[in-house]
Image (tube, rainbow over all chains, first blue to last red; front, top):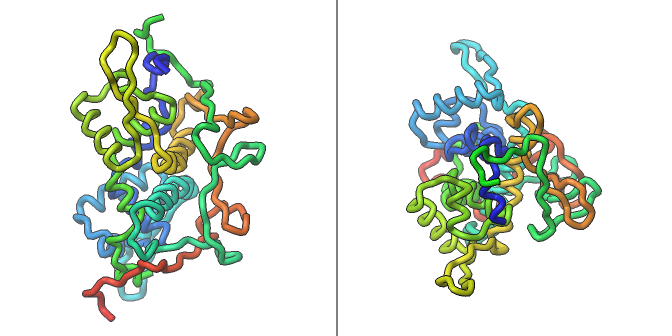
Length: 160
Length: 160
């Protein structure tokens, strides 16, 4: 695998995703959005993070199109915003559930997980599966093979 | 969802997982391990991160049982270590692939992804699916329902 040294990794999709959401508070905001939290004060009350940091992270998630900020107004109160996962935001949830499943398996309290996510239709637990497009269930990394995609590039200064 | 304010989130499996692997270089080390990199010098050559940082992150991943450090020796060279994903480490790969899929969809170069992961058995692309234990494919967060697990706790100072 020395060959990997010659690859230009600057367009790696994992690294680029981490540039957008690779920060603890951002992932925890997504967790709360997944659990149904929508309002600034509720995010703050659950996360106990500094207000300016929360404000900055929410703004970034809105700018990236991961959360949408929608105005709402209750009678007798000023207008406020609600933050709701967009479809682009929902597409991050499998990664978040991957972190959750690992935590449930390896670092949970002895009693078990604090939270389960179930299917609203049938009530059964939700879990992640790795499958190929032909439907085979993949259980080990040894079943992976890596292929260069259309944006694959070599480093321009790599030894030829 | 005001109720969420009263939950003790200290044993959240997502937050606990982020404490172990929630740092950019750690995820990128896991990416390289997934792509078959095993040696310190190869990790360094691909990641271009400071040696002391790489050394510290690898040590933490070994201490956590996510990578195993195995000695190898080539004739005429001193003994070195190879870092290999353990089963516990492999269980993080779905989360890493979740980040990759999001990046491929939303922040890839215009040509497309840099890398594909295929099933070695049949050659088809590998992807993540959310399914419930009864096998239903879950496509939207609106299909989730949250249930308290056995380690669920309320904050002790929460309003009753």
